[in-house]
Image 1 (tube, rainbow, N blue to C red):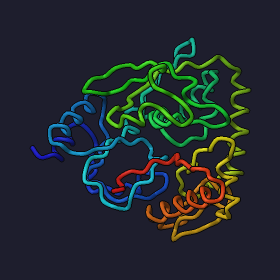
Image 2: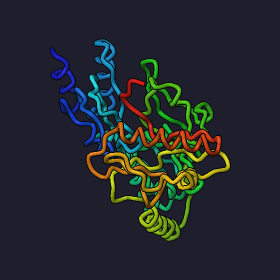
Image 3: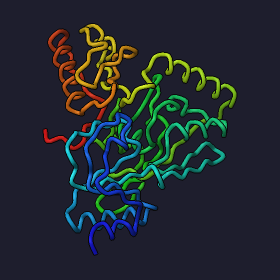
Image 4: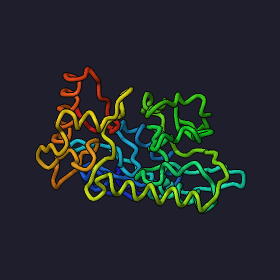
Length: 300
């Protein structure tokens, strides 16, 4: 049985699929196979097949924090956001959720259940898995504050890993050091709250985001982490890069820590902007700018 027929047994399969269709940047070359595993058994079987055949792979959620190169990826993308999206609330505020769940949806559902904690995530267009991987945060809150355990596939087995073993810090987790560990779900603990107050806070932040962020253009969210004692957007403004454009990629004139795709932007153009900003800020301030956005399928 060839690879396509094998994969098709365990998920929805797209061949020669453009990754630009699956990232919020709308940038990226084609991949050989783009697969939505139908459940955890299918996921485990696909992982076995890929290992047996020595085929490279990458796991995607909503592609909201990725800069995929313009080159073709000769491997398999496993995407969890179609089927791995079940979640369950318990009366004490425990939330069990699969990695493919929209973090925005979880924030909305927590509000409907009168649980507080995920208000900060109500505007983050990614999955729970991606949020856990990078310890996503906003408004001085972060996902790690609410994590109890994470369900991980590593060394060909599933296990629950307690938060204390995950090395969470600002935009950091142990998963970034172990690309062969795959997040499949998590247990979070939220607090009981007033539904009206939670809804009001989420609504006010939605208005603030629409006023301050370039949500009308494809982007990957904040490009850089905030260095110690600095705000990334302010440093970028001070070097005169607000509105700077290379090809179809532009530093947003609405929020300088966003790079937007003005139409037909190439990954190489975004990458050039990133490196120019890093070099200019280091030269002027001696500050090393570290990216939040993850690069995928780059030779360097």
